[in-house]
Length: 132
Image (cartoon, rainbow, N blue to C red; front, side, top):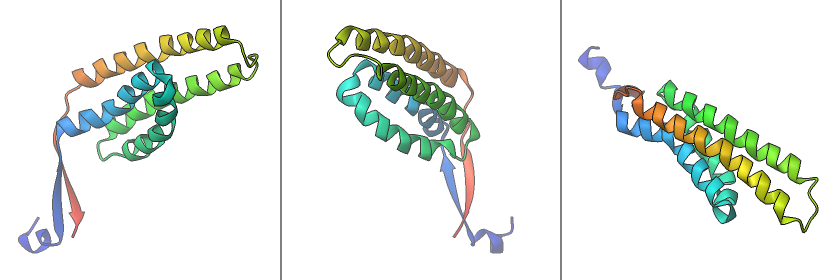
């Protein structure tokens, strides 16, 4: 790029560490939310939408890929929980605990496996050109 054209662009660097953290963030939130459902689970349902919106269209496409995979699992389990819990009697604690245990058994291993995959993947710094 010539120097004359370079004055119209700004360069922004996205570090490999930043991209790896962004790819991991939904997994960390999902683990915390499922292990401490009240109040973290309720807060994470709202916060996860913001995290998903920020990271799904990240400049590094692998960040979006990992975010989307984990979101599918988290929202699928949360939706199934709501659908199943609709039929529970109001005062019965045992069905809620069993369903929560199944949710933990799905989300925690999935998220840990994704975190291992993210950690093993080679991440590189990215340079972005933005118009001034």
